[in-house]
Length: 157
Image (cartoon, rainbow, N blue to C red; front, side):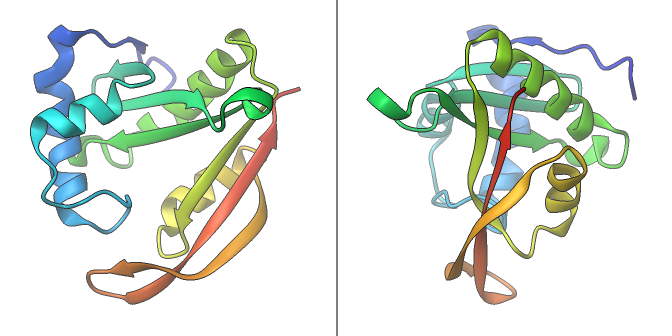
């Protein structure tokens, strides 16, 4: 899906973004977010960063750490259920990697990718991310019990 149009999100996109975030956060099986998070708190969390939207997905980029660690970014992605399998996640990742470089970051790191989220791991690894850590039994998955979380990293050169 190379024709995916991605743009910076604005407050006028809040309803569309919430419609994507809510089912993902409520499911409680990919993000370490309280499944009962309010709409206002979820949007505040998502918009506390550089936020982007496309038809079928949204993502953010923010510094992974502050001060001396602010040259490495972190990103979060949500693809709407109806867009699954259409290349939206891959398009958002390619856009995010380009944007991260434009924003001056040297690397991107995912701090908490659930080992059970094999689809996302496959996308990240195909894009050149390396697993640099594993946190045993870090997440209480609603169906799978305690699952490991992975730390993935990629230099942006």
